[in-house]
Length: 205
Image 1 (cartoon, one colour):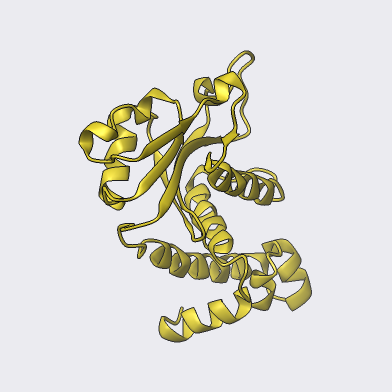
Image 2 (tube, rainbow, N blue to C red):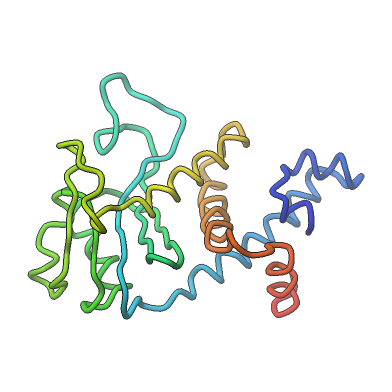
């Protein structure tokens, strides 16, 4: 548990404990399952300010295609509650219907929304979100006072940097590592070892 809290790889943990890598991987995955369940408990956001954004994960690169035009990557949509936590979902695309369905399912209309100018966020005001502020990254505008999405972008940076050490993740392992990154980010100011002990006391593996 302590090695997991320190974010050591299964290989390094097996080396330090004398357990097989397979055994360590099994234990680590069971811990991630508990993390995923906790992440799903984030209730609809009722007040405050949020930032929404999407990001692309994956090793493949197609020449001339970056960002929302990237190919062969996994698309992740994120909601960051300022001074709070982040919530992520893997999505099939960045279309308006897809992104706004998640927003409307998890964010109440009184919340202030910050986004970039991607067309997927067009019309949020029309469906009840009266306070929607946007920054234009295409015009090199990344912050205008409190109007920015720096919080969710800091999570993308954290998650991608953390996943790099695994030298590529199998497709069926990506989701659990994404939610683990989410859980770690949400408890970045806490003693993760104590948080995990409390979690597993309530719900043993």
